Length: 333
Image 1 (tube, helix red, strand yellow):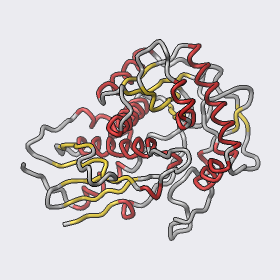
Image 2 (cartoon, one colour; image 1 turned 120 degrees about the horizontal axis):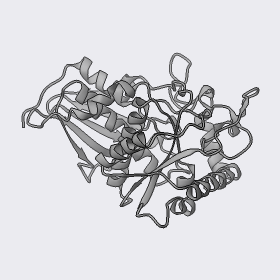
Image 3 (tube, rainbow, N blue to C red; image 1 turned 180 degrees about the horizontal axis):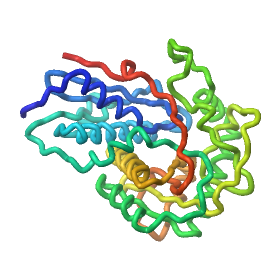
Image 4 (cartoon, one colour; image 1 turned 180 degrees about the vertical axis):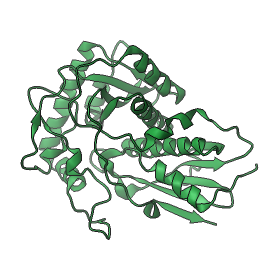
């Protein structure tokens, strides 16, 4: 193996792109270690940033870390660096989720480079979208993006959309009556945190600016974080009557499947951003085992649903805070 050894600035830039990825409650549950000698990034999950109630098996944590992994692949492709990715490389280290080795003997996968401009423009939008339908050609492109990562993207029929929206309401009701979920959500939507940065601003979690308005006049798949920390004068808005949803699924439901799904999730989101679409994600029906199975279409070979996307035309979401790269990156000789 021949390795290309990037300079520290390049390492920092690649990880800086990686950590713009979405994660459950914006917990950013990742850590990168760059081994200079082997030119290898090691991606670890951070169990201290796991959701013990709503993500007890760490499926969501794997999705978020894998989204960061895909961003790293995009950034490497944009820089012209050939990389070799291995998922779950060491059974003795369960929190080591992937390694990314810069390897000159590997061909550069240049295709992801086209998504680099979208990496820092992708934001979750919890605002109303227009009723304008997403063209079939764009949906086909998103299907292809998921397929490239070994996953399936399905656009549900009208009856199935109604089912999913019903499950969203069911999940919201369960959250509101579960004190452990309430505490968990409040902890990640509070303006203060035990892990507060020295500047006094919180570097993680969902800020008030990202809550969006309250929904008026009907169900919506946008997760409302405002119930945990009510905000005065937040405002109301009417959301689209028929949200345009897409379901991301995998054939299996193992840790490797979750890591593939997280990369597919980010690839779909970046492609949608590049295509001028606004996006948000709905995961709370998937956080309850008795609801998650019902999200799938019983007449389609969907396997296991890993994420529900909402797509459309509307305002882009605001920036959400990110931890400094110095907190999530360690460089070892």
